[in-house]
Amino acid sequence: MARKNMGNPLNIEQFLIQFFTSHHCEIQKQEAGKMTVQLTIDMDKALMNRPFYWQYVESTGNIGKPKQLTFITDPEKADEGEWIHFGSPRLEQIYQYLSKTSKFIHLYENVEVMNNTMLQPWLLTNICIMYEGKQKKEELLSIGLNLINGTFLFDMMQRLEKIQLKPKISNHCYTISPLIKVKSGLLRIESYVESYVNNMEHQWALESIQLLKEETMMIHHFYEDSEEETDMNKEIEEVTARLQPQITFDIINGGILYLTENFST
Image (cartoon, rainbow, N blue to C red; front, side, top):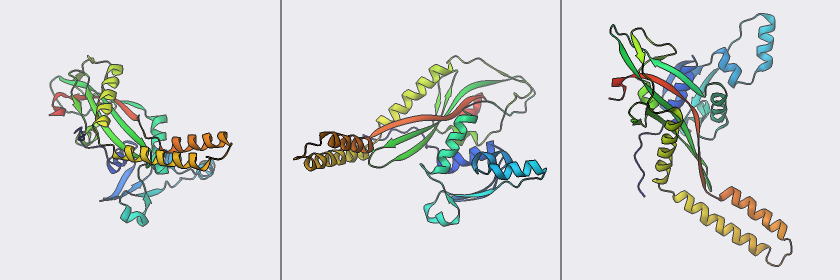
């Protein structure tokens, strides 16, 4: 089946920029496949695993020095910094941090107007899709749903880069209550993600199933003249857990954003 067009998946580089800038870290250098980030004290404490350093600094009244990190997303530049990719420990650490600290946010578009301006509610979800089988991979999607008219945007984070967001509503602006409840909106997004996955080519899954059959046959052949049925079943369970293809997805973070009417145009 042909892959359904649902916009450009959110790539790692865009995700990192959004994550660090939203946590007040300066992107000091940026080029294709490489970026250097100056951590804040809070981000250093969250990511760098230096509790004794910060305890010493704070107990002596000194000013600590947060780390500066260079992230590499291009494998050809892997020796120039920390290579970060889907499944890498650092990316998983960031996911975990987000799930604990900023799962759901409320922000408003920063606008300067003199007349009363309406802001519409949007439900933002950044979703990680995990494909597991013979090989493992992950994909990020950034989906926005207008909670007034049901419009979907599948490149939400890229669009948000063009505007400023802040935690308080701007002067002369007002919000309208959503017609679509958040729970219903999440169900709509879940349905669209399922449709997206179902309309992809899944050659990797077919290859996983074929390999699972081959390895299962080999195990049966190995134990053909043996009475160790328990051991055989255990090996079959292990290879099935490793190779049985499955697709799962999880909302990394999201929020309600109040945006001007022309945001999606």
